[in-house]
Amino acid sequence: MHIHFHGHACFEIEWEAGRILIDPFLSGNPTATAKPEDFTDLDGILVTHGHGDHLGDAIQLSKQTGAPIIAVFELANYCQKRGAKAHAMHVGGKHEFAFGWVKLTQAVHGSGIETPEGDMIYGGLACGFLIQAEGKWLYHAGDTGLFGDMELIGRRYPIEVAMLPIGDNFVMGVEEAVHASQLLRPKVVIPMHYNTFPVIAQDVGEFLHLLQRRVPESSGKALKPGESC
Image 1 (tube, helix red, strand yellow):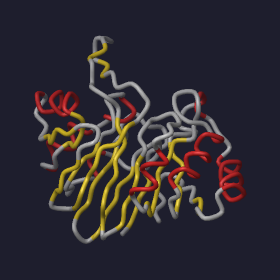
Image 2 (cartoon, rainbow, N blue to C red; image 1 turned 90 degrees about the horizontal axis):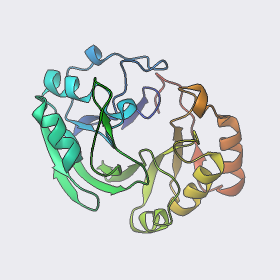
Image 3 (tube, helix red, strand yellow; image 1 turned 120 degrees about the vertical axis):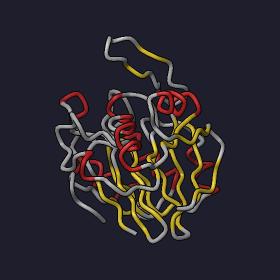
């Protein structure tokens, strides 16, 4: 299995059974090292919520690859009406795709979709994703604040890799993300959603230091855009 980081909250995950893209914010992302045109073969496009820095290029990517956008019902419906292929789900539900299982989790965040005119369309609930690949569970938290049921997620699923936001202001900050790691108990934590814009600037070294000190059973892995693990 290979996990590629494309900046902000965008991850490409590929393994023998499939290749998926999560929160494909590429166009307009000042940190992205990939372009939408670089992707011609995808099995799924997972979108945590409707904000532009997460929905990103999902509709274009679905049209050019034929991959379904996997999202909550309201957001999936929005994308489908604009020509994308979509598979609607909702928080708490799971579905087995050809590439593996996907389960939607709670995320404490909004999900408005901004129109070109500047209006805001309701996009349903924000969510996170649990993904089973090669018998391992991966967790992409989406944009979220800290919530107590992360402990329940950690108890029920042996998480191999957790992708957690640390940027503060809109999501968890460094301290909260470390506490989330204590609740989730993943083997590896990859920080995301930081340093894309000045308002979410964070010292990732501080996060890695606190994680090592407070959650020694979890290994921190900070990826730069374009790097993989």
